[in-house]
Structure formats: structure tokens, C-alpha cells
Image (tube, rainbow, N blue to C red):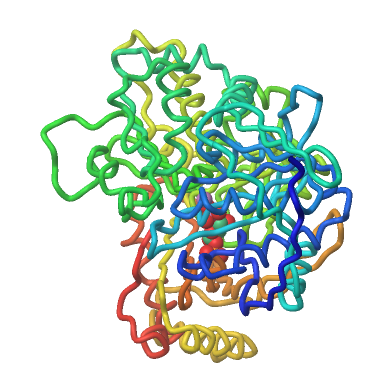
Length: 582
Ligand code: VG1
Ligand code: CO
């Protein structure tokens, strides 16, 4: 039977603008007739024809509610748009980093290679019928579509009048691996369902010394815990940590992927990863049981990571700096040296200090992983990170949660190489404190005001931009709030010119830079699905090694006070406290 291609008339929906990482909306919005279809067709129309006709596309995601229906719709639309084959991870599951790896590495039995992917995820946002769904398109290099493409997609969504779909194509069983062949008016169309983990596991084994990590994990002195928060990381955790590296089954928490993430918020931070935080001895209740030496968590689509030691939290900004400082020795993939390092603007300058010490190329880009891709493709950057629990390298073009855990395990394994039978292992905390002693410490915190009235958030930002025209006025507010805080020496909106393609991204965050190197940054989130989220990033550098051991909220209290006064946070938002502090 030859499937038929139908042209379906449609009208545009408002607000289909991809944010920091794709289009994210409530499921209720996505299930409206034509809503997903409009976005998918607008994406096809934004690509050059050879990236669609005859192409191989990957479609999968973090398994959240509505994914299974969305996959069938995208398969039917791909068939109708002349795509040659669609690759789907078993049960529709592929982590965001695994999608990137599949695009870059996987070769089909007939030699085919993928040229792009629809990733179905809203990442760290909750899932379920009343929660969020999301979709984003990744390109041939395995990275998120750049702004030139996402802008085009958005323009197309505003004028769309019809989409193509093969309505009579039967649903494909995505629960079992194998190839299903179909015949269309223009020839063959195949759907291949494949194992979600194999390509990714193979890539990890080519990067890290699994033997060395295995020795660490099998040492009786080392204890480990990994929390997937019911996200897609669970589809990889057992294979990698238990089967490959010999960790105990009991080290895995919440590693069964669920459509609603067990009703939780799959965001690996101190607020939402409650169970792990308690197990690691960081919660308020002190448990009888000795916490593990090392703990980590992932977000819904497994591109984020949180790293914890026993009763110790590693800030993501420190984490990327520490990985960069140790990579050449501890990780075989980097043995011949780093090409350079990069961070997003609001991420602390801990990485800058390492780059300087090691004489590495260094880049500061706007928030969002898409900005790292060009640097990596051009060979300028090996390791990069964001303060928002994102860390990764040029092995793919997405941040990579499990990679970050393996990087930390590699550092621990390397530092304890000669020590596995000794008295005591070198701990996560010791590695971090040693790093601060060598490089100084960047005290860092982020305040999130979630679901604030969108108009109020806009007004607050506009007020700050206006305030930036007068340093005198700024400093009189600063000094009025706290006389012990240094002067603001520059205030601007971050603007980035891509050194590879020259493209310019404006309005990427409002910065206040202080004489002593402290920074305050304000920006609006681009990943929320309702209202607005204001993010306030606060950072202070301490070089004196006798002062690097303070509690960070205490050390930052004066700057926090200044930030709240400067922005009139409570006045604009009505909030006396943030929703989340990290
Ligand atoms: C947030 C983070 C940003 C990250 C983005 C996507 O964006 O701040 O650093 O790249 O999420 O991460 P925003 O615009 O809300 O601040 V993920 O794991 O949600 O794909
Ligand atoms: Co994510």
C-alpha cells in the first residue's frame, strides 16, 4: 500500500517563538489541533530542501507526557515532507546528549547518517497532562539550531497556511527495536527503532578510562549515588554505572523514566533533588547512615548535572573550572591538551582564572548551549559550562549530564589512583577546597523569581536599563544600601559577537560590574512556559586563601542586599523572597 500525502489547511498560533532551548508550553497548549503540526512544518520550511527531502532525521526525547503521540505525528509529517527515514530511540527515549551523539556518530546499516533531530523535551520543567511539553530542532553538527534558523522558524509560524501529513500511515510500534518500511508517492520511507543507549555508551567509553573508574567504584571505601529524578538519564544510568562500571544497584535513585517524573520537578538542584540531597547529608535532618562519598543528579533530558560530595555541594561554575583544570591528566580524550574553554556570561569567572593559569583560549557567550557550537566546530573550545548545572565538551554539541559525572569520577579515580588501598580517599570536598586555594574562590549564588507577572518583570528590566545610564546614581543606591560593597565601575547589557560567523546577539543580560571583580547580572528566563522568571546572579571573587572557606550565602549577603535595592525587586514583583536559591 502506498501512503497518501494530505495538505491540511491551518492558521497561525501566537507565540511559537523558540526560547533559550526550543519551544516550551503547557501540554494543554501543545495538544490543540494543528499546534504541534504548525511548528513542525514551520521547521521543515526553515531548512534547506536537502535537509528534509531524502534526509534521515532523529525523533525522540525525555519521554514526558505527550511524547508518544508527538512522535507518531512527526513520523507522519516527515513521511509527507519527503524525509527518507526517521530514527527513534526505543520507547521514544533519547537523552538530549544522546541525540547529539546519534546525529554525529550513528551510521545506519545502509550507511545512512542523520542530518538533524526533533528533540521532545521541556528539560527541567515538570511533565504530565497539566505540565510542560517542548520541542526543539538540532542541526547536522548535533547542536541546537542557531538563532538564524530559530528566527526563521518563528517567522514561518506567523504565516503558515498548510502542512503536509501522511494521515493514513499506521502508527509505528516504538516499543520494540527494528525497521518498518513504507512506500510513499515518492518512494520508500523507513522508521527504525533502535536501542537508546548503545551509541552513547560507546562514545563515553571512547572518552574516559572506564577501567580506572571501575577500580574506584569497586573500592570498598568509595560509595556512590545517582538520582535521575525519573528523567531519561535512567535509561543510561544502569547500563553505564552498574553494568559497565560495577556500581551497586542500590546506588541508583529514581532511575525509571516516567511520563510525569513521578510528579516531581526534574531539576537537579538543592531545592528539587530532595532525596539525593538528604542522602548526601546536606538536608536539615541528620541521618544515622554515613552519606556516600559522591552523589549526582540529572534533569529530565539528562543534559544537566549536579555534583555533590559527602555533605558538600559543588557549584556548577566551580565544577566546570575544576574539570578544565584536571582534564588533561584525568581524562584520556583531553590528553593532548585543551583547545580552549568557554562559559556563558552569568556563569562565574572561576573558569576564567583556570584559563589564564593554563594559558588557554577563553570565550564568554550568551546563555544557552547553541552559542558554544560554533566555537567547537571551529576547534576553539574543548570544555564549556553554564552556571545552570550544564557542563560539557566538544565530544557532542549539547551539555551532557552523564559526561559530567564521568568527568568527576575520572578526577576522583585519578587522584586516588595510588590510594585505593590507603587509609582514606581524597574527597570531592578536598578537591574543591584545594582548587580554591590555588585559584581563589568565586562565591556565587542565583536567585530565581519564578512565574512573576510578565509585565512587572519587563518593567523591572526596563528600569534597570534606564538606571545604567548613570553610574553616579547607581553608586549612590549601592552605598546607601551597603557602605562595605565596592563601587560599580561599569553597567551594560551583554552583547555577543560570534567570533566564527560574526552574528550579533543583543540584550543578553543586564550587568553591573564592581571594582573588586564582583558582578550582579539580571536576565529573564527563556525556558519558562508561563508568566516570567527573573534570574538574579550574584558573584564575588576572593583571592585570599584564608578567606575561601566561608558560607556562600553569608559571604554574599551584602551584595544580595544591594541587588534587591538596586532592582526594587519587591516593589516591582511583590515578592519578598525568591522561589529558588541555588
Ligand atoms: C536556562 C538556563 C540556561 C540553559 C537553559 C536550557 O535558560 O539558565 O543556562 O542553557 O535553561 O537548559 P533560561 O533562559 O531559563 O535562563 V535545559 O537543561 O532546560 O535545556
Ligand atoms: Co535539560
